[in-house]
Length: 290
Ligand SMILES: [Fe+2]
Image (cartoon, rainbow, N blue to C red; front, side):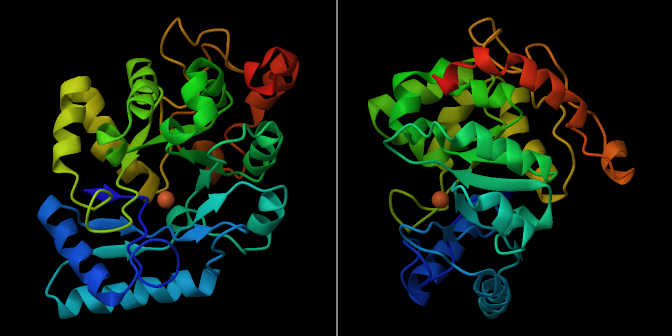
C-alpha cells in the first residue's frame, strides 16, 4: 500500500517527536501492510516551515533507519503545504515539494476560517501544471457547515484526500466525510499519521469501516489505485467529475472529463488548459466564492 500523507519523520513538526516514536510508527506501517511512503512534513508559516533539504535528508535518514530495522519501505519526499498567497511563487522557485516530484501537491487549508482567497491561488498553482490535493476537508469547520459549497473545489480540478483517522473522529467530521464519500468526491485516502496512538499509521479499523461505507471498486480506488497513480505521477481519470446530482451545477465544469492519459504532459501542454476557459465563464456562479 501507498501512504501519501504522513508526519513520520521525527523532530521536524508536530508529528513524530523523537527517533523512538518514528521507529514505533515504522513497525505500525509494516503491520498495516504499507510499502511506499511519501513523507509530508508541514510547510506552514504559522507553525512549521520544514525546508526542502531537510525533507530530502529525511528520506535518506528514514531509508537507513528502516534498513537497520530490517523493514522494507520506499520513502519519497513531499510537503503538506498550508495555502498562502506566495505558494505558487514558492513552488516555482523550488522551495516547496510536490508529492514524489509529481504533478500532485498536498495542500492544507485553514481549519476554522473559510479561505475566500483559495480558489484564486489554487488556480495559479494549476496554471503551473500542478494538481492540488486538498488534505482532510472533513476536518475544516466551514466544510463541515456546508459540504456542497466546499465540493466546488473538486469541480475546479482539485482532488480531495480523506484522513483515515477521521472515520473514528467527531460526529461533525463523520457527517462531512459521509457527504463527500456518498458523492464520490474523495480521490485518495491517507493516514496523515502523527503518532502511535489515535493518529497512527495502522488504521486497519478505519479501513474496515471505509469498506463498509463504499463498494469494493471505490474502496480499491481510494486506498490503492489512486494513491499509486499519485506516486507514479499518472493522471487520475475521474478528477473534475462531481459524481452526483447534489453537486451538479456547483462545480466549474459540471460533466467535464479529465484527460485520461499522459499525452498532454508529454507534449508539454498543460492537460487542464482547455478547461480553464470554461472556468472563467462560470466563475461568478461559484458557491465557494460567496
Ligand atoms: Fe498532515
